Each structure stands twice: as structure tokens, then as C-alpha cells.
Length: 164
Image 1 (spheres, rainbow, N blue to C red):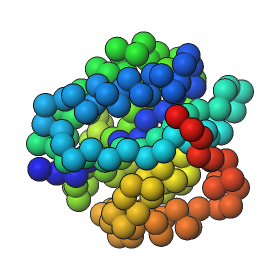
Image 2: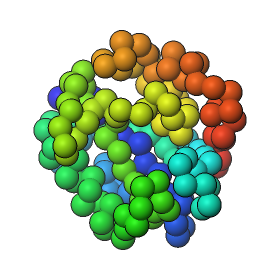
Image 3: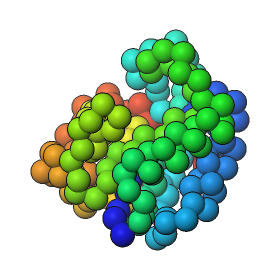
Image 4: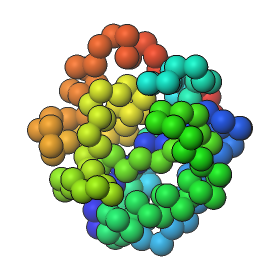
């Protein structure tokens, strides 16, 4: 079994309902156990700013699925919730990113883990530090907590816990 970490986000439709349903779907996948989930966070958009705030969370779990199998299952879930990729950083009903898969470093056209921009994004690191603060990010040789501490204050101020 390998520890995998996902970041989920939504800013179209009933984001809390979509994310809760997606979490239930993930928990039901064969080969996933020991599931942990962060609180929900309201976060400012990154890149394209003329859109609604996002609701984000992180989850971690043990999995027997291979990285690409897990990625494809998450892409299938995005499609179930009508994910449309209009343009980079645009609004979406459901976005699921595979952030970490054990201590593997994968850099292919289809999958890059650890996620190449995770260390820049409070919407990934704030929820992740709630569930896996001491997790070592292999490619950056440091912990999630330390990566969060290195973020600019403006980044940290753009995320806040909400009730879900």
C-alpha cells in the first residue's frame, strides 16, 4: 500500500455537495483505505481571477492502485461531475489533482508527481497540513508544514476554513 494525496476543488454549482459526493465516491473505490480528509477551505482563484471563489480540501489514503490507475479513476470522477476544461485555471465543477504518490517522482506527459506547483499554492498546502503536516515531499526534500510556512502571507490570507 502506498500513501496518496489528492487536492480537490470546485467553484461551479453546489461546490460543497459536489465535493462531499466526490469524497464518498473516492472512499468507495476498491484499493483505497485509511482515508483522511481536511476541513473545507474557501480560497481565492489563481491565474484567472474573474470567477467565483473555490472550495478546496485535501485527502490522503493508502492505496494499492498504481499511479496512472488512480489518476484515471480521478479523471473519470471529474467527468461524472461534468468537468469541462474551457481554459487553464478556469471555473470548474470538480478538479482533482494527484499531489503525492508515496515517495515516487514521476514526470511524464500524463502525470507529474509530486505536483509541480504544490509548494506555491496555499489552497493545496493549507488543507494538506491539516492531515499530513510532517509528510515529506520527496522532490522538495522538506515537509508539508515547512512548505506552508514558506508561503507568502498574501497566499496564506487567500484561504480560510469554512464549515462543510
